[in-house]
Length: 95
Image (cartoon, rainbow, N blue to C red; front, top):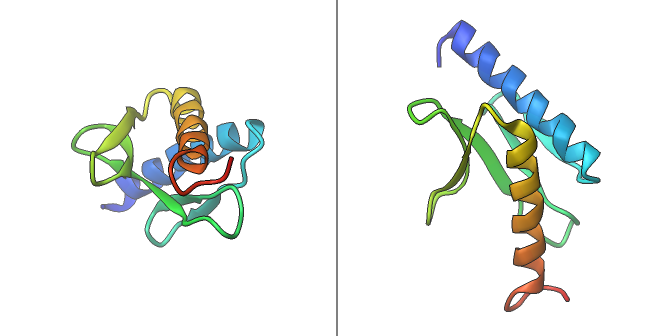
């Protein structure tokens, strides 16, 4: 990712972090990757949220390619919060 594209990706990820914090989640930002890490407690595996520039989307599940447009960070944050909730209440998760 070139300089200005990388800076734009970081700004977009920071905006996503702001929305995640408003929902009570505790994201981490990796500027080296760039990506956002997210989990609701230390016993859970991290979710890595990256930007797929070719699709203009936040991407957090590579196995079924769950994504959300980068133009709606609030909507992406809500979907991520719901994903964490489903993951933790599903088979093998917490109730």
